[in-house]
Length: 411
Ligand code: ZN
Ligand code: ZN
Image 1 (cartoon, rainbow, N blue to C red):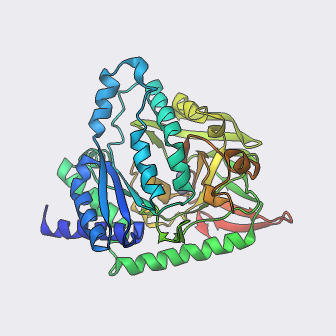
Image 2: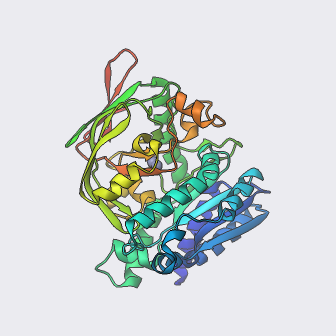
Image 3: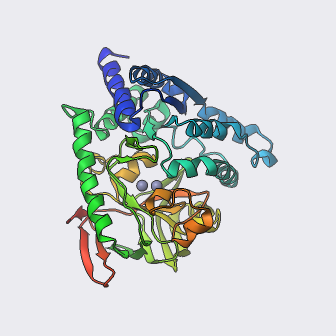
């Protein structure tokens, strides 16, 4: 590690603790990440204690062990899982602690694994995760997701470079996406958050009943539930801590109405599922449900995602990102949702975030659905933004107001 890189990594760790988590004196911090991320995790722990953190603990993962499992484990064992992994997170949430997840595994890690086994594990883990992900999506705690440039991931993003150089390039890109290249990154985040907060305030005031999307292969109306809330820019969690749950983040997002989505939408970027690409695909909706889907590649995989459970065939997120965002302009396909979703306006099938419909944090699944919110074990983002996408807001009176033109905000 060169002294220069060590400084950048420490600055990144500091940003994660102060802006991403906004860790409070007296809080505990649980970090979940791959063992390759140990250098960053150690720096995060140091900054966390500097901020007054009481206890920092980690749950390490070794992505290679997943490959070993798919190769050697009994075929009928993939519906099994241990609960302690999720319980650890819940214990932190109940105690008012913070949770950090570090992503960055090789996007092609599972390319040789059987798709139906991948689907089984996703379904099993998805269900096991529901109690924790519901608490997290209700913003019960300050949580954050960040990336770590592992060698495996870097080599996929920059396949023509030698591994060390690829990793350097990916770190450079990651540091830029989180504005560490700004003269004062903390101040840069303050103004970035303020700009997004102004947009969410505008959209929350407007309370459009629907959005209409128009672009190549896309003609889609997405209904928005009553009392929907746009989120983006730093917002206080249920326990009053203002944090930024994704570093980077460029989006403002809300919950679509689970029964009021009609028309066809074409994805503008490929989707990577454990090394299996879904490309050139479109979804058609009627009354909120996917009634048709087509993909140039990976159609069966996409179908399995949509059929995971009843809610997986409906939308759970609508997010707006200008085409000129720094991540979009970097022109890199990261093969990682944290980055790719912030390059482009996107939708997600599956679970909606509880804090996107006012007063729903503690609502039962039935109450949430009655308000238009979607429940599912799945939450799968796919990108639909481009420099050719126009989006209108539709008012309660049925008037159309331009929100985005050729991929850029007009408000
Ligand atoms: Zn999103
Ligand atoms: Zn999402």
